[in-house]
Length: 364
Ligand code: AHG
Ligand code: MN
Ligand code: MN
Image 1 (cartoon, rainbow, N blue to C red):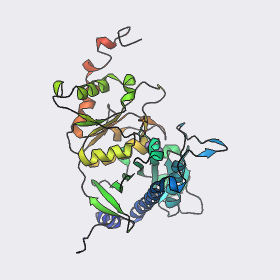
Image 2: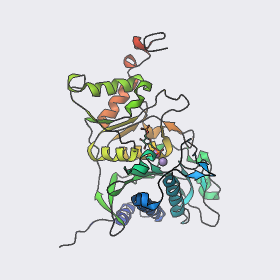
Image 3: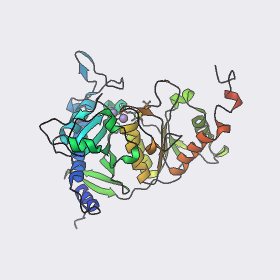
Image 4: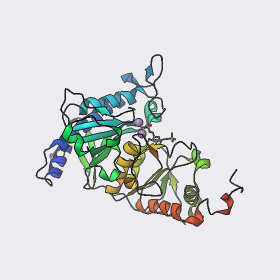
């Protein structure tokens, strides 16, 4: 059988780096370390029950709760450790931040410090971990502030509060029937499939493009009573199908693993919504800005899709907290723009709709 040449992740990165002749190679080495962490997590996830890593992480006989107030699974904690161990030693990073750590992680003093910062959700889709449904890891790479690079000082929360458009690179790994890595280094988005025989990520999906139109949407409809008017309107119109304002039927999906959802949308289009709602006034949404919305947003935009809060482009939001939550809408460009339009059209929002006026039918 003739040998089929495929580009490896390493080769892809070297070819991308040729665009920047003066670059040191640190960045490429960092991406390869991130990829190695993802391969290690893929192995742990693939062992399933046999790996002895299903279930909650018990601490002191009780449950271990992360800064989000969520129960940590054993695999959440293992994945977080793998990200740290694979990335702390090489001298590329000034610090790290993760969903599973309350505060920024300082590079230990026995290792050199570098100019990048790594922000990650080590395992996304907690509710699916123990039931053999696809989960993933999400990562975002930022440049450290100049004074951090110059002084080598410890990083603080404030150093990470950069808008998504400042990301140098972002991506995710999806642990599904095959393990895939989707990456953007700011020059489009590309997909790599893990060849389990070689342990290498192979470029299988160059120049990803999200179709601009779609007939598929994803939202957790059990929250519908908490949605704001523009989202209610959008979903109602999708549900009305051919006979409604949209004049076409829509299909719906909800995996409850954002990475799997994002991947489906990258492959065949669609729109994902976890919007701001009024379920819990202390939370501006379900998903987190720095390690969920921004990296997925950058991948989407680099693939010709769009990511938004509903009100403004996701990548221009100025963060105010490491674990800040935000309403997130992403996917096929024309649908996301339509949802943004619904948010900006005053006549169609609660405030101007007589049904939602003070002391009206739908207000108490
Ligand atoms: P995580 O497991 O990292 O906490 O994130 C899970 C997220 C996301 O993957 C998914 O879209 C969402 O939670 C599902 O939320 P619901 O359970 O409310 O549907
Ligand atoms: Mn997550
Ligand atoms: Mn997670």
